[in-house]
Structures are given as C-alpha cells and as structure tokens.
Image (cartoon, rainbow, N blue to C red; front, side, top):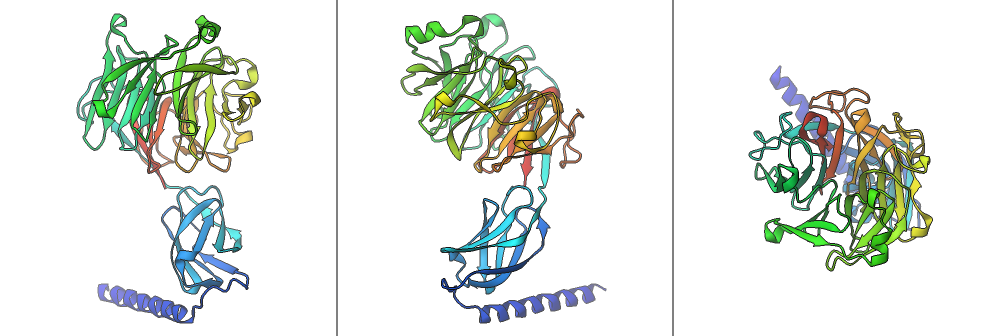
Length: 440
C-alpha cells in the first residue's frame, strides 16, 4: 500500500512539473500595449502563507515586475509562467478580499473574491492566576497586569496597580524572565502610579505617566538598563492652571512618530503635547470630558490619535466609544468611529460595531487596531479597511482557556500590545495572566 502511495505521488509531482515546464516554455514577456486578462484562481479560500495560483494572460515571466494585491495587502509573488502566477496569500487582508494583478501601468481584478479564513492561536506567556506580583522565570512569575507595550527588540512592558503593589515590569520571552523596573508595596513608597505605557521604537525609550500628578512622567532608557528617571513636564503657568485639579489624571502617554512628540490627556478632556527631549509642554486641544481606558497611534497614519472613553464621558455620544483626533487639524475635534450605545456586542462595519467597555487599543504595522473588549471578554480587531471582527475569545463568556479562536477564553482582558511580527500580547486581567495571540 505504501509503495502504491509513493508511486502515485511521484507521478502526480511529475505531471505538475511537466505542466509547469510547458507553461514556462510558452511564457512571453508582458506586453504593455495589451491588457492583462485574468480568468480563475485556485484555491478559492484559505489563510495567510497559503500558496495560490492565478491564471490569466499577458502576465509576463518576470516576477519582479508583478504585484498582486488582496484588497490593500500585497502578496509575495514567487514566479510567473506568463499565464500563471504563483503567489503567497498575505496576512489579514480583510474579509473576502478582491485579488488584483498590477504590472507597470496595467492592472486587472478577478471577478470572484477570495474567502480568507484567519487562523488564530492563543497561548499563555506567564502568570498562574495569582494576583500578587512575583518576579522570576515565566513559569513561576505572578502578574496582574493592566497595560502593555513592546519595543522593537521584543521586550514586553507591563504596568500594574493591583494585588498589593504598583509598578512597571519587563517581560522577556527570549530571556525567560519577569523583572520589575519600578515597584512599590505601600502607598507611602509609591513613586509611580502608572496606567498606559509608550515606547519610541527607534530609541527603545519607555515612558509612563504618573496619573495623579499632571507634570510627572518617568522614562526608562535601555541604554541605562531601563533604570527609572523622573521627568517633569514644563507647562506655562496659564496652561497648568487651566487643568481642572479634580480631573488632573493623565492615564496615558503616547509617542507620535509623525512629529516625534508625546501626547497625554487629562480627565477634563485637555490634550497636552510634550517634547520628549526637553519636556516642554503645552495644552493643544480641549476635548470631551471622561475617564480614559486606551490610547494609540496608527502607524500608517501617525497623525491619528485614538482613545477609548468610559461610560462617564460627556457629551454622552462619546461614551464607550473609539474616538480619533487628527493631530494635523486639532480644531476638527474627536470623531467617534463606532456606533453609539455601548454595553453591547456587534461585529461588522465600524460605524455599526458595538463594544462593552473597550479598554486598551494598539495597532500592528498594517494599520489594524486590536481592542481589549473588557466587558465582552474577547479581543476584537478593527481592520485597516474599517471592519470589526472578533479574533479571540467568546463574546459574553468569561473563562480561561488557550487554543484557537473557537475554544480560547478570556476574563476581562484589559491591555494589548503588538510586536513587529503582528503578534498580539494581552493582559488578561481577570485571569492574572499575560496571553499571546498569533493570527495568520
């Protein structure tokens, strides 16, 4: 039986080889004076890294001159015989992507769309459900993280403020270690009461805001072994006096590669811009009032600042929503992206989507936003083309389970961070663990 299978497989491979040889020998260079014709492709469905064959005419045989797009995502083109392109399906191109072939000034799009099926896998990085912080190897450490951030080297940073201590820690899968960068175990010792974190990935410098003191921030430079350094923002007297003291809480700080500045927001709705070198600071915008639970910058449009607001936001249309502020046009104000209502669940176009206490938000390098949907116990994705989908966890069902998108469970996920490969780290707050989500 085994010899029959081997022989059959060899004959099949020989047939494919002969077919490819015939195509290669019949291939001609692309003729720019004639249109590209596209006919069929195979397979018609699949996921990232799958091989796909695109049939048509006038492709030419120079693969370096051929571009293939699944919606806006560029596929890797391996070869072309002239009437068949061999390519690799890109990661997360969006729902039912259209396939377009571009050669120089000519292009053509297939009539049928590709059925893209994302494959997701959730694993646990560290933590065992115990809420008191304990440093050490990943399989022994205790974590109760709320917010996360990553540098370009893969160092994961976590802030926490529960379980009897407060601080910021570094988590390294490569080194198999969790180590605190700054920690306090009593209110009298508490130097930094941190929420959101940000990293300038060019320099690796980590920055955290002290939410209770408007002007106090801390930086952690990898060249100084991430030793904490207090940095005080220098506001003008009038700007500082304008901050409503009872609403002074600056929960977040975000580095913006567009203008190389830091941005923070106080609960009274004021947005401050801070020079990370001099710490000269100014209030640049007055937005809606409300407690904040997430903040991020879109790397594809680095002038776009995104925030999530709590149910106490005022005006009410900003409650439990995802908002965007164009830093090039501050006068235009924050714009809500998703549907009003809150405390619900609905996937689909972002203008129709509902969340339930969305917390942290972070982007991958392709402009996809990942949202810790705290109240729905799941991780949502807002794709670069405006579609919200659930990528891990079961909406409305809390629990703890690793695995694929159907079986994985979370309990009140709070923080997210995305590395250079597009892998998502999650502060699974209710389970006192750090989880990792890989989507392809």
